[in-house]
Image (cartoon, rainbow, N blue to C red; front, side, top):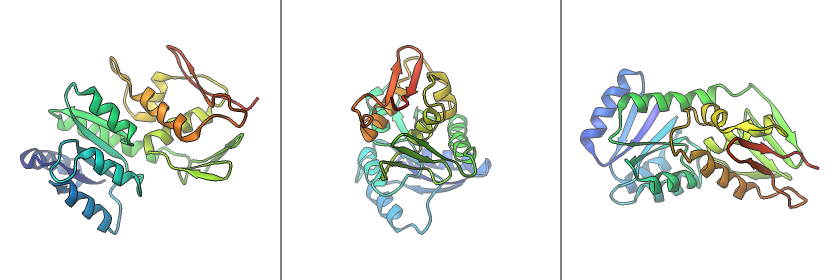
Length: 227
């Protein structure tokens, strides 16, 4: 995997880069938000993932994430301050696929990056699912709603794919976290809820204005079949 690491802590970047390269990753480093955006725009090929710190000179991580998401679905893993749930939730709402709290453990970072890689590799060779007005192409990782394209982040696509595959059936939060986000739920973990809120906002209700994704409180979610 080729990774773009964006963090102004040069010592941390060197440490993480050394550790990740030992695990076979190729690392590019940038220490400024504006420079990172310019490099992303000028890149001839996409990175397999971007590790993005929240606090950056030039342009903060949230603004950079919004700029990335305007033109790319490259998986983004945010680095947030430990205990800053607001940063975590905002990052997920803006399109981050995962997050790791600082001070970051290199082993945890490797595991999360491997999970991002497995999610993409585990997709079926070519399956197009049609449920009502929604079409989900698992190979192209594209969503069309009534013929119009809908842009989702990698994590949002993974979660919706699970729900649509099991349309009409309950999918547990534990399964959504493990298979959709690549890591188990933790105490007070709100990643699933945040991603689901974004998916609902982007897809809207069913044509009859009833809810498209139903919450089964304390259990999970269900993609509703057209009635």
